Length: 406
Ligand code: PMP
Image: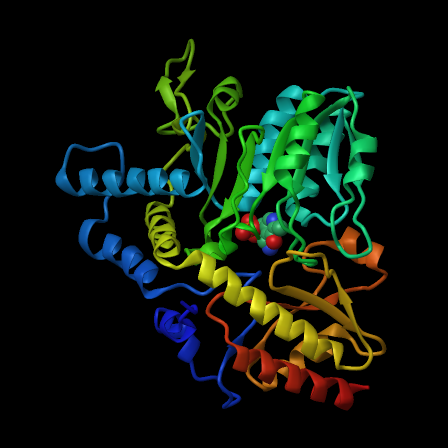
C-alpha cells in the first residue's frame, strides 16, 4: 500500500502554521531539525502536568512514575537502535555531546603521541572539532579519508590509511551536506582488523530508519531532535564493557557509588555518565518519538522519501546554472546546491518570502566546503511528511529565484 502522506501530516500541527508572507509553509529544513508529532509534544507536557518529579532519588509516587518513564524511554531507544545487552544507552544533550564524550573521555584516556585517528572529509564539525581538541592534548594525529566526486566515501582511500597506529575511526553514517550514506558496517569491519575503536555519528541517518549498529561498532551518537523528538537530548549508545573501563565524564549526583573525602567510587554505565538531574522530560519525549517512528510504515516512508528525492533531482536538473553536490546511489533526501554568481543566502532569503524553509551556509562542514570549492551551499532536506506538491512548489520558486537574482 502506498504511503499515506496526508495522514502522516495530520500528526504534525506545525505544518499548518500560517506564515507572515501568506504562503503555505514548505518545510525543507529537516536535517537541521525535524518537526514534532503531537504525541511527542503531549508526552513532554504530560510529564510536567501529571508527574513532574526528580528521578531515582525519592520513594514517592510521582518520582516513581518519573523514574519509570525515564528508564522506559532508555529501553525503547536502546531497542530502536537494535543494541543488545552488550551496549548501554546514555542520555546526553545530543549527538554533539555524545561525540565529545567519545573523543574526550575515551580518546583523552587512551590516545598517545604517534596514535592515529581517522575521520572523513565530509564530517560535521561535531565529529571534527572534538577530535582536534583531543589530538592537541594527546599528540595523536588526525588522518582524513577522502570523498569521491559523487559524494560517496572513498573506501579504497580509507583502506590505504589503515594501519597499526590507527586507534580510532569516527565517521558519519550519513552526511548532512551530501546526503550520502556510508556502509558503516563495512568500515567498522575493516577498522576492527587493525584493532581500532569505531565511533559512528548517526545524527542524520537515524531519522530515516537506517540501521547502523553492527557488533563491530563501539559507539553510536544520535540527537533526538532530528528524529522527531525534543531538542537538547540525545544518546550515546556504547559498548558497556568499554564504557565501564572509561573514567567518568562529569562528577556529581547519581553517578557515584560512594563518596568520602578519602575515596569516591563510581557506578557502572549508564549512571556513570549521567551526573546531575538529567533532561527527564526530554528523555521521555525522545521515547515518545521512538514510539512514533515505530508506528510509521518505515518501508513505505523510505520509498516515499526516495520518490521525493528523484522528483527533486529531476526538477533541479532543469534549472540552468545550478551545481548539485552529492548524487551517490542510495543517498538520503538531502540536496545541496550552489548557483554560480548568486550568494546562497540570497536564495534562501528569497525562498523564505515564498514560505519555503531551507538552510544556506556551510552547514557546520567547513572543511567539506573547501573541498567543494564554495563558501556555502543551499540545502533542501526532506522528511517523510513532505509531499510531491511541495517539491514542485520549491522547484518553481527556486527557478524564479535564480532568474531574478542572476
Ligand atoms: N552530526 C551530524 C552529521 C549533524 O548533521 C549534526 C547536526 N547538524 C550533528 C552531528 C550535531 O547534532 P546536534 O547539533 O543535535 O548535537
